[in-house]
Image 1 (cartoon, rainbow, N blue to C red):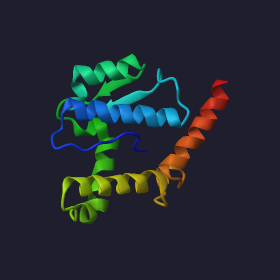
Image 2 (cartoon, rainbow, N blue to C red):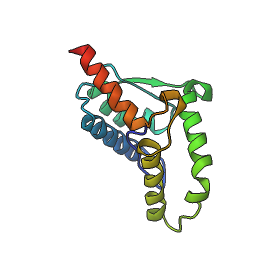
Image 3 (spheres, rainbow, N blue to C red):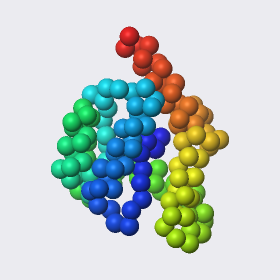
Length: 143
């Protein structure tokens, strides 16, 4: 499930912090209010900025970074982006400007999360449907 994303002309800390804040808002819409047991797994780059780390840690998230140059440490994200680029390359290459690219990426993310692209790794559900089911189950177990 893609919770937060954004596009920028350069991968800087503002882009990373902004997409993180979007993800937090989305998680809250799903009904998650406490983040103390959620692990954020990522590679390096803007994710190592003190602004990003402070934002995530202040909300109770755990941060888990891959080792430098070890793509296998973050295999889930690497596999996702590989498939995403392959599946949407032809569509995204049609963008004539940055705003059109943003619109096309939004469409691709929405399709991934919500539409009829079912995932075998999550019982042939959409990521959004699976997430809602998991939150419901966790809520029942924790109460």
